[in-house]
Length: 123
Image 1: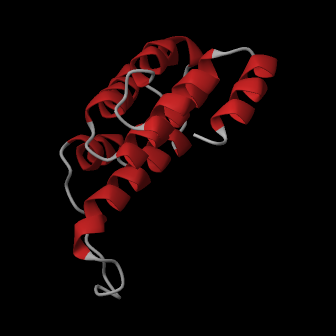
Image 2: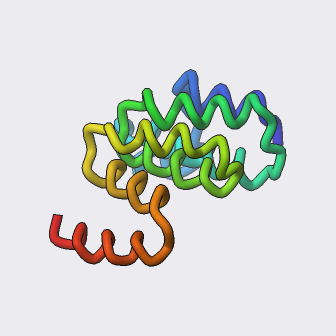
């Protein structure tokens, strides 16, 4: 896997080309799925360089899709919990409630996170 190419898919919003079933996925969703796949590939590579971490931090804050921001946040926590603290604080100010809830739950102690999750269930 080429880490730089995956970062290009993630940051530059380049589309992956589908070789078959072009009509199955609506065209407007392809960039979102491409970025989600890039996040998964970067984390799976186990090559968490500062460049990868910086790309994930950028996506946590700037991506237009809330699902992509949330996924980048979750994966960043798994890669480097110390650096992820910055993204978690930023995530608590996100415009989407799911991203905010994810960020808040990961900043808490495990027992407090469970209690907060119960309260957020009806949000």
